[in-house]
Image (cartoon, rainbow, N blue to C red; front, top):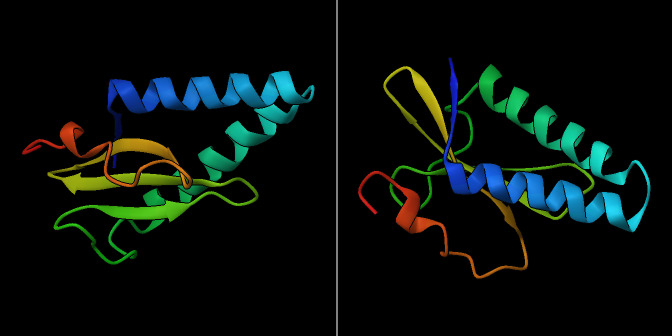
Length: 99
């Protein structure tokens, strides 16, 4: 299944990786690896996490306080947000197709 990134989710991913890289050399790369590993788990079984908020699903990244918020539509996995778990929980809702 192809993974389709919302532009803002991509920006969140890059911004977080850059932030972590500035905190400690190589930490941004480790963050990116954990996000990619979580996305690989999603691709392996995209319908496994139960739905919340109607059609969305979420998977936590290991070792970092981030959730991948996504929905499955047609033949694709749509990444809506790479959300820090301390952020307001609904800021990404406007990124959904019906949002």
